[in-house]
Image (cartoon, rainbow, N blue to C red; front, side, top):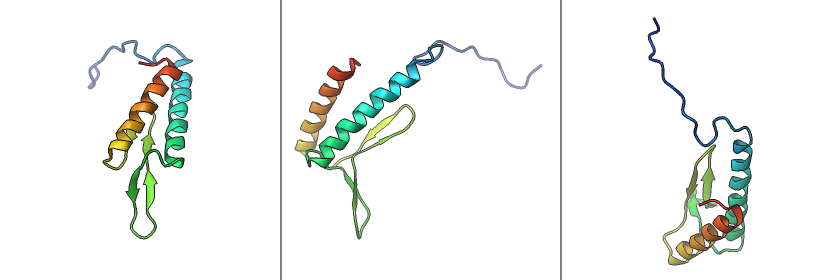
Length: 94
């Protein structure tokens, strides 16, 4: 008898399909490129980190999550809306 209860695995987004993680990484890289372009062209103002020489952080990505960080500006909201619509159209993800 095991001290740990057994559980059944369900078929999720990436289980059972060896190509799914690779496709997810490609999509995440595409989003990163779009966000980097917005920041580099001063169309999105990221959150400033640091005191003496502040650094702007616009987004953080982990294995399966993306966190978008920015100043509280209407221009940022409009830019994010545009990049999300573009990302949806380019990637085919909804």
